[in-house]
Length: 172
Image (cartoon, rainbow, N blue to C red; front, side):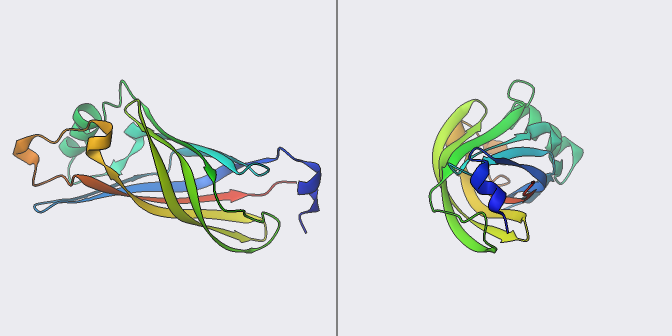
């Protein structure tokens, strides 16, 4: 079905659409936000991937002031406008065969200019040339030197849950 892959050893596929969300579940407040401004690529031959999101594009939050604090105080999005993940899929994926592939990806998650190595579990679903990548994982704020002031300590979780949902298409 996808025999052309054999002739294109460095074929890449790009994110067509996607959503990255985060959730903070602290004792006094729950905070949710998401963005669809995600760019990314996978090189099929070596299963390497790279994704980038624009920090200031996150929408949601409980108030405009909360969004402002997220960008200015915690993420410093003027100085560090993007978050990035670069890595490699550990398990072999048969990109030519429809199916569901549980995978782990080993790579570097970079926030605020700080890179931390992570192994992230996820699922790759392939159906008629459409690839969907999904994952949920935690990020410790302390790993990225994001400090929570004592006055809001009960309102922001020390570990934020991220949800990734990306869709890509094979192209001939």
